[in-house]
Length: 300
Ligand code: SF4
Image 1 (cartoon, rainbow, N blue to C red):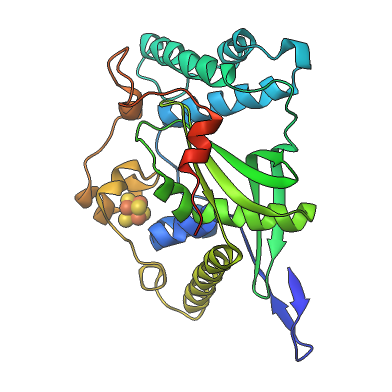
Image 2: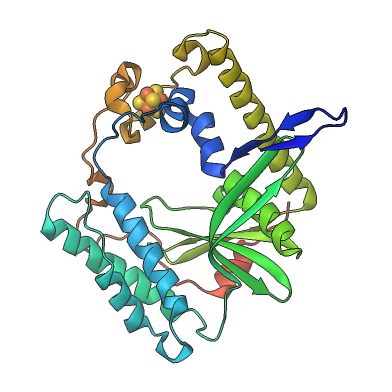
């Protein structure tokens, strides 16, 4: 993608998604294997937690697509059952136990929704650009609340979340900018809806905080462009895209191709993050409510 610069020369825009930027920030080597190496190196086995997340996201999306009179909690549980993805689990028994647990989350979450609401977007793709960056991404749910757009992101991981997670999320901030520009409506509030605890963590950005996230994204994009240029100019892969080993390497799809990552982390079974004792929910389970959302909402 190109646009004209001030001097009339074409300036190449760096096209990306928020997850592409995050991948480079986390580990340049993983970025290279994910986005540059072709063919892409074989990945590890599918993760059960990804199957869980996709199943819940698909069910919630399908629930909003139902006619108004069929938007019930029981329907959401049925959608989860019919679309359940079984990849990555240790065995059928573990998959079923996880499905039952997730059904409870979805049932309680949907019971708190107003079926008369009509989200303005479901898994909607939005995009925006700056002088150097063209960023696009897909938003789980986009609400219209009193004329303001609100970005909603569903989470199904075991770890509890906080408002700091929402405030610090570059992806959510970029979605807010892109949604506002795509739909020409104000969009400053972003929310993480954590299904396992039934909590909503909301944050309302200012124009300044959105601009900060955008500048940071441009900085990461500039680093990626520079690293790619170094590779093209003859630097080795590891000079241009060095590994960033950490304990998080245990979750990396490319760990098997990375001696530094293997040394830094223990191998994990694909189902490890769903292997909790049946009935053991993350602490602090509470139903989603608008009061939870507003009490978590802060300005900055
Ligand atoms: S295993 Fe770790 S260091 Fe290696 S590519 Fe993956 S994230 Fe990077």
